[in-house]
Amino acid sequence: MTELTEIARKIVADFGGSVSRPELLSRVAEAAADLDKSFQRKHCRPVDTDDGLFVLRGLTVDDTDIGPTPASWATAGDSAAVWDVLLLLLATTMGRPIAWDGQQDGRFVHNIVPSPGHEQEQTGASSTVLLSPHTEDAFHPERAHLLMLGCLRNHDSVATTAASIRKVRLSEDDLALLSRPELPILPDDAYAEAQAFAGPPPHVPALWQSEDGPTLRYDPAYTPLDQASPEYRAAYDRLTAELERVSVAVSLEPGDVLVVDNDLVVHGRVPFKARYDGTDRWLKRASVRVPGRRTRPPAEADEHGYGQAALVAHV
Figure 1 (cartoon, helix red, strand yellow):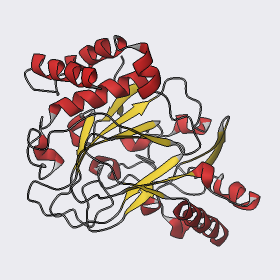
Figure 2 (tube, rainbow, N blue to C red):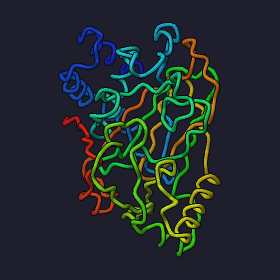
Figure 3 (cartoon, rainbow, N blue to C red):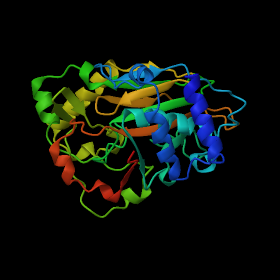
Figure 4 (cartoon, rainbow, N blue to C red):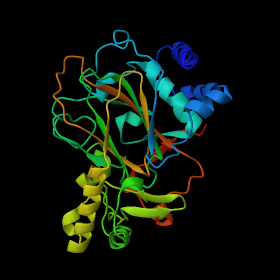
């Protein structure tokens, strides 16, 4: 892990401390390709259990060196830039990093911090409400296969919640109901442009049986459940209850990287009280697509994605 940090530091220094230049992705790809194969097998393995997640440990964070927690993603700039590159190095060994035109200025690594005025939202900028368990970017057919959350600061031990569809118990009738494209999943509040898209929202299944087992696409906060039949709503409620039953809480420590299979696991966050004094919880987030992975219904290829384009690092 020390070697990985040194590589990241050198890349940041060579780019003058800026991680927004497009050439940086090519440099990261070259460095990732040179990583020792045993390191890649041990630390950059796929999520290969029904739990659908693991925590990578061994990286270190200097709480003074990273500076204060930014007041919002918009003011974060290149803060703690070494960690942007660290996550990109890990993401590049696991697949292809992706970004979004409509989120955090198209950056490939996002800053997740509590922001004044957003306390009650169902987005990463909230704090005082439970961030409901959800599939990351569930509204979009090109959403990530893997989600990476790197912890820079978490003095209050704020827990990330996670629950795997492979752990729940549902009846055959419920599985059949939830596999029907009954309702749309609408764009969340982090995507203002997508929310204004004029096209009709596609109806999508909440569950899908892939070659390896059940997968899910789930975001109740942005699913208009009042439009569904009573039978579907009841089955959806039972799915929600089961996800709550099998949910685990992961309190990340500085230097931890949580890797989540976005097709198996819904994640959220417990409420907390933000201080806005530079010491609040601070995560970095990277999203990864895995080429050739077959875990999504074929019908997703016809969705419009609410006009949002996924920017894929072709590395």
